[in-house]
Image (cartoon, rainbow, N blue to C red; front, side, top):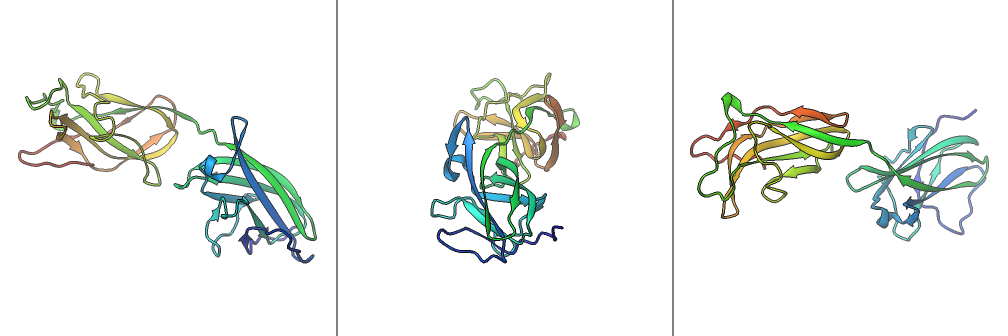
Length: 255
């Protein structure tokens, strides 16, 4: 019978080192493959690794996160805390933001004595995605603002910033990023975020902005209250809370 799995250490296996028979270990080496081409950690964009044994994550409380590459060109780690038997080993390659980019799961039989080795090639993770429609509106019966003579454009534009669970910006339109992507429309007040992976996001803010000939902008309406966005299927719609009008003399911006 297998005893409860307790991972006492996570460290890179060296070469030419003997291991005592009473300490069975599992050494896992990993590499990556995309479109048939082998990749190392840097080429794959993988910073750290998650390792799960029979669904239980390796204990890294003493060692810290498992680096993809320990700095000497060897991509692998040695795990302790086994009895002999067959285990399911899941390997996940994560980018610097903690997103899983590559994964692989294999069964391995750990010997009762010495070190057992597993060589794994991780494949890219396929994340379901689809378009997200974002509907916007204006408080108190407001509508898109008519641009002033300082603007060379016939419309104002809708700006927004969408972040993931780690606070990373995944889609945006603002003065620096696609400022004219979403012309304001009173008749069809919706814009599309294309091919967005399904998941939970936060709309950090949404604005109606007037682009000026000087390259600057005035914000005419805004809602800077963070809103949770659930994106579960292609073509679904998130309805943002209404934007309020900028008060005379004020210059509130969300970004």
